[in-house]
Length: 371
Ligand SMILES: Nc1ncnc2c1ncn2[C@@H]1O[C@H](COP(=O)(O)OP(=O)(O)OP(=O)(O)O)[C@@H](O)[C@H]1O
Ligand SMILES: CC(=O)N[C@H]1[C@@H]2OC[C@@H](O2)[C@@H](O)[C@@H]1O[C@H](C)C(=O)O
Image (tube, rainbow, N blue to C red; front, side):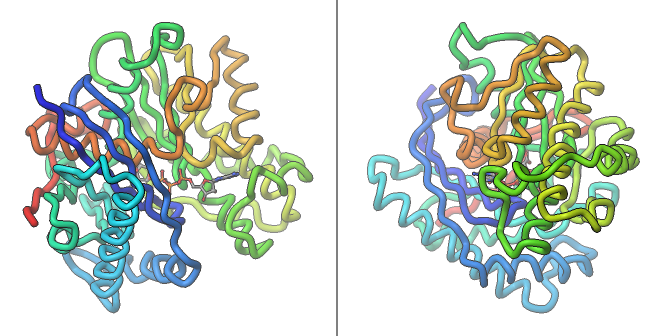
């Protein structure tokens, strides 16, 4: 099977910018990871996306673009085209055959079968001169799935590619982004996956509101604070945590009400503890207790989230490693996943399974547009 060179573009729930990663893959077990690049959004653009999250609440049909959402979608797509150009200026050997384009989720209501990502695939194809696969969540929802998470297909391929010393089963991949999701990879059979709770999103909102900072860099504020366990427990008692998988989250599903009133530092520390406990709680919905937990996503760089999770996992004789410890790039995993999924989509392979999103049968997805 010949390998396809693909770029993956991810603008995640943290709304901090565009992650780009390259790979050559057959969309199955053959994965050659390439370079990656992060292109941050400026504050003004980020706040346009934040406003869009409110505007998008009025959407009833996924192609509606009320108010200035159409303009934002165009600008966001053009920023992605510029990011691809910047990437290829840096890495000219990675001219792609195909681009996997996530876009920006502005609304996700799986109970209503509604998920909306801003991103104009045709415009991106035209600007980059490359085939684009986008809108990868809709087909899963049409097949009765949550429309998220989609990264598990790639996590499963990565788990199988680990060197022997790290190949432990079961392994769980943990993505600590704005929202966290987990992928349990058994020795044989389909991955089991679901969104596990708030990751950095509440910490970021807290730091912005209480400290005027974008996020708690290296957990500096949390280092001066202490955990208010009663607040953590208040969050963990929310119905989401008792709900059985498959399940997925929208950014608006959690808010700061339970932490309001704490000092800046105590709030940052408490929300880091929550991020770790939410991931740890996910083990209750896995077929067996995982042996190895591999951390991806920006939250692995918050030493309190990683440290708390490590302590919790030790109590069940498991091991926590960062993606880098096993030879992966934890900042690029989601963008890599979108490259991998685009190739699977082009080949008509499933992106999701009943065990990852609750779709009725293994389901492919994505819309391909030619330049
Ligand atoms: N050095 C750091 N210290 C602490 N936190 C960090 C650090 N670097 C990144 N983060 C956190 O990681 C976040 C970005 O993570 P990531 O890029 O994985 O999210 P995302 O892909 O947007 O989210 P999602 O996976 O939910 O779509 C930042 O908003 C910040 O909270
Ligand atoms: C609807 C949506 O965009 N969901 C994101 C979000 O961010 C993390 C988590 O919630 C996950 O379900 C998903 O993203 C990853 C990339 C996924 O689909 O696997």
